[in-house]
Structures are given as C-alpha cells and as structure tokens.
Length: 200
Image (cartoon, rainbow, N blue to C red; front, side, top):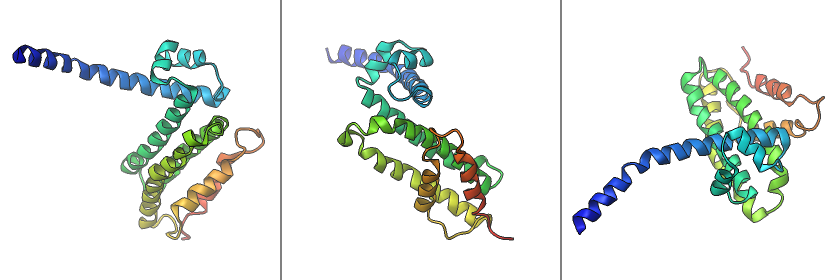
C-alpha cells in the first residue's frame, strides 16, 4: 500500500514541473498584456481586451486574478520586478556604467508612466494598495544605488547623489506626462541625467 502510494505520488509530481513553468510563462505574458492595455486604455479597460491581447480566455484571467485589484497589484509588482532585474543585467552587458544607468532610467520612466496610469485604481482601497509603495522602494532603491555607485566609481558621474532623491526627482518630472501632449518628460529626465556628468 505504501509502495503504490509512493509511486503514484512521484508520478504525479514529475509532470507537474513543466506545467508550473508553462503556467508561470502564461501568467507573465498575461501581465505584460495587461500592462499594455492599462497604458493605452486605462485600468478600467474591459477584461476581454486584456484576454485578447494575451491570447487567453477570460476565464484564465479570472482564475489567476479574481478581482481587478488583484490584477492591478500583480501588474504593478511585475513591472517593479522587471525594472529591478534590468539594473544588474544592464551593468553586466553595457559598455559603461553610465550607459547602463541611462538605459535603466529609460526603463524606469516607462514604468512611472504606467504607474501613473494605475493611480486611479490604487486610490480605491488604501489597505490593499498601500504596501506597494514599500515594495517599490525595497526593490528599486538598491538597484538605483548600485547603478549610481558604479557610474561614480568609474568617474563618469558625480558621487554625491542619493538614489532616493534621484528617483524622486525623476518621478516628479514624469507627473502629467500621460495627460499633456506638449510636455516631454523623457527629454527633461535626459537633461537631469546629463547633469550628473562629472566635469572634465
């Protein structure tokens, strides 16, 4: 009896791994699609639009994310994670630490524009969305610090800049970027980054 129980348990475990990997990939694709739809149509976009973009059925979305708040939180965390993971990868692959910093700031600006698109939904339930700001800081501040320190150590930028101040400044420059076509936040952020250069 124990033998048969063990064999059925192990046969049930083996095929589960690829399914979990597939499910994870499907969920990542769904979150990417939801982020795109939120940026273009707002957080109140119909779930069917997200399902169509992701190439899945609506039931799949509701199975993973029973409420819209669940989906918004997951999109936010997914984008924070992607931005955090990009920092070390860019440092490893970039020609210089400064080039990695510039590229990461571009990704951070992209994230902030999307975050502002999620703001309406986040105002609905402070207990639900409150921890996201802490998550944002915990994940991104160390990455930004690493990039700034590397660029400063290479002599490319000044060394007296705090990562929190830098991120806060970029965030302030991005306010209103999604609602005013005459305002080019990316250009102003580029000027901010250029101002970090160490005088020659």
